[in-house]
Image (cartoon, rainbow, N blue to C red):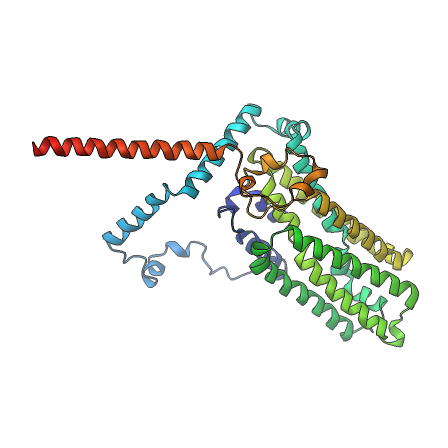
Length: 383
């Protein structure tokens, strides 16, 4: 399960234009999550079913005429001259040339040197690592693993009532995460939902801490009015999590690293994610026993700090190409708030506009020359 998340580091999962977000990343995440709950499957489900003649016949894939096949091939060939394809190709070429100029060879020692000594890379690495740390410092793992105990701390009676409130908490996270992935992230971006969601999470933890400290709730006396409000805040916490830290670190990390250091950097981020997850789940029972309400106050403070960090250090990546982030990370990480929202020029790697214009001019000149040659040949044949 842990290793499965490393697939996020593969650039093949970022095949869509920069103007839209690639939902396959989240389909993968949902698949990995459900795999942990539904281990085992029917071995009769053949992975190569698409290649079976019966399948191709059932869906009409074997009935394409020669004309239809030729037309589709022509449509694919025509795409190579599309401005977007040409621009994307120029950006990739510029990225490859820049990385090849940095150093020859590829090994882990050289990759680590690139991360440490190249400032733009170290800034990316620092940003991604901090995002994964704050992702865990919100206390979500404590709520995931110890939700029944936490609901009892705010006055919910044990048994079926606790299980019901816990189930609703998980359902809220599921529904709003799907809503965020399917609708919000492409239209609003990553930065604003993260700021709003993290602020709601921090405020929820703060209320729970203060209620436990001053309300002295007890499951034996039933759920009081303050406890009901605390339950509502826990659900608001789930809502904020779905729109904030649940997704943003994975998306940002997949978008900022150049190909040369992407694999190592993403692997480290996921290692950090799971090792901190393990530490928090092991520490939570002792924290709730010895710190009590202070556990939630600690999470609130850390999450508020995360909000401040995101505001100053995390720009918006919606609409940016992966290659254009090279220009972005030439700036100090602490001044990213000044470049939070990209202009149209900043969405494309610097210099590719000139390359694209030169290519288009060369293509135009070639077309004019071909037309002139055709006219000459036609005139000669007519003569």
